[in-house]
Image (cartoon, rainbow over all chains, first blue to last red; front, side, top):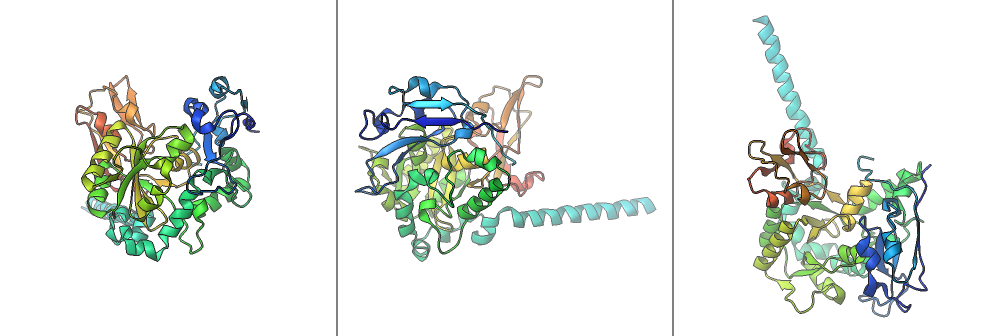
Length: 94
Length: 317
């Protein structure tokens, strides 16, 4: 049975309007070799839909997380909690 | 005499059989060339770049909605599922297969009711620098712009002005000011765009051409794995967002000096150095035919050959 990786981000610390705006920091995106994170505008309606102003980060490619913990170490807000599970390498030829 | 007769027949049969197989593969291989190539490679068909075609498919409206929602594509729920933990979801029995089938259908959708927020009908193919430059020089509709790569911004947090977009897409992207490079000329003439592609390809970025939505062509990206959303889905989940190129690399054994320079250029792990024979080998099943490795070779040992000319690779896109 595959054990799934879980990555939680505390949005009270990392979110537009919180103490750190993800667009300014971006450190977790930079250190993650498999690029597990995604920085995106929130799903709410934005006043200017072409240039949304409220952003946050989600960990999306969880099966690619290798559990190296670099993101946890570098996060200036200690906002990331990783519970490593099984990383699935390239499944090409599925 | 008798035996040679039998051999001749056997040979004839083999030849005939091989040719038939090739023809069949040629038809099944490039579905999109067959549908939209008008007798050639799909991306060499001038018709697919025209404004008239874009209007016919309401491309401007589609692109506006698609680009307003581009960065949220992977977190939006499609039939109850978003892409978070996609690798695990695809491992689930039955459900995994259903997800794969639904997503493939959306990626290649030619239906009337395509959803731009899901980027239905948005996919592409890897191509070598020469083909990309031919497109920019001869086929792309104006205006041509160079903008920050969305994938690299949302997945790596860097701004890298490497995406060449053209036609009706250019004016849509210009409204998203965060992707427009500041203080530089971002509307390019054809010569400048050809030069930009050259520099990006030499850095190791893989050129790719995109339907958006199929059959309208309006972008040539210079992709980097793993940030590229298209290459991510192809390399890690085997979804055909990006097809392999029309070529594969061929290594000239006599010329290869085993310097290994090409190995570090390959984004697909197709090249490897063998200490025992002191040269580089290629895994053609992994080769996307981007030709980026050629820039590193000082000995003219790497050349692209048509994928169709390699029996084991013909039809494998």
